Length: 367
Length: 247
Image 1 (cartoon, rainbow over the protein chains, first blue to last red):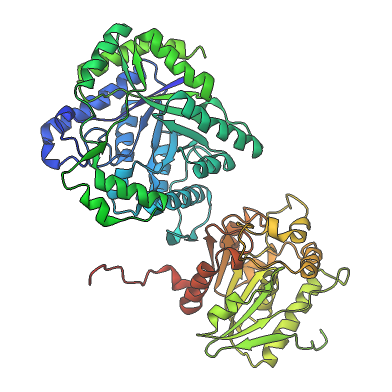
Image 2 (image 1 turned 90 degrees about the vertical axis):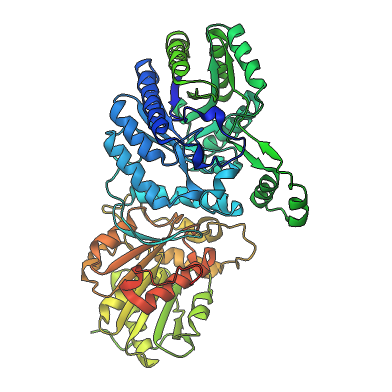
């Protein structure tokens, strides 16, 4: 099993953010921001040095918690410092992005890394739809069409036009071509049947995030079945699970830390107003919305949501077993880990990476 | 010299610039003609498909093109845009080469006559025999009309003969738009780029969420694209819609 380090590039003072999303830019001190990115890059370098095979990036907006709104820019910077690891862009939020631009960024990254790119496509969390004014009801359709268009743009050898449902382009001719032919490895990060089916039908990998083992297995089992129906078997590297982690020298130390975090309740900078969350969910699922009712219940500024609970907590033995469960029950061949918990500083993260590299990573490679 | 060709049956509708449509699919839909009728004089030709064994080769294709040309001239068309659908695109290509000064623009929807050389697989008649399963991106759509079985069988036979027209492409000077369904399973994946590469004035376009039968899968997208190309030819690539939100 391979390990991937999520280069979240969190802002150093992210623990001070207000609970709600988006985090006002006023919280960003430019000098501290520069330092935060430098620390984040150092963490990626150190993760590679300690044996992480992938360094991943994920598109998230308007918050310093995962501060990579332009993940291709971040990936390019890190790729110049990390010269061996695969650079996994997991990934572009397709409903938000111009798919042709995304294809150009991916092709350029594959060139800059001399074929080390792994590309990922995902829809994004409910708040992300608000970033570029995307109707939540259109997110799924935009993602499915966006994937088709990107794959076409990266493989079609002649200029072409595209007449889609959401995208219309009359001249597409992506330059450069990817180094990896016909395509860099691609992961569809999803929990939804239609996107899982898409991944299976197009022989793409699957990514699942932040779910318990049983729920993840329910998704990957469907994926394996649909891959079989499509006449192929995915390789271990094509099943990626992303989870958040806190690793300490012992279980006791890890759980003591965890319980101290419980006092802080939800992670800052992630929550949505209840009214907004309700409407997004309703639009995403095609429900009729009673705006009068929604707004009447939210005048006090209720908040819901927030970061998911930690997926992996414990000492090296426990963490190894927890990760192994995703390998054994879900078929995951790559574990993509989010280390930057809000209360941790750069020194804490480096120590965790060190411990993970020494005590956990060698054991992951045994299965 | 070919003998004079008798006119082929056709229907006519609308007024304006002249457009001829050759739709050789197992579905005899008129949606494309209907969509163009408000702005164009549309001649919709449904030529009889040669029965199996009657010389379905390049010479027969040329004869068919000659018959089409004669029919359009009989109808009074001297200059016209030509739209060919599926195997009808194969006939349209030959007609454009036969009457280069008459055919002012060529729109080929799911053209089947170009393939990589040497052929990777022999022509397969099966898709034509079960068109609902093989030619539609969404066969479950209840709005789709059933195909005509006799027409499907005749086209299956025809598809065996009219194959590779690669050598004709460099001769094609007519402004051409070749349109392909993103999920077309009949046309070799290399075919669109061959059109773009070998035909001097050819643009190619992929229609998302459509298979071979684009006229059924995404009719509005096809109408919109075809109308734009008919109006602006190769300059259709230039965006001309106002995108201001609050002018």
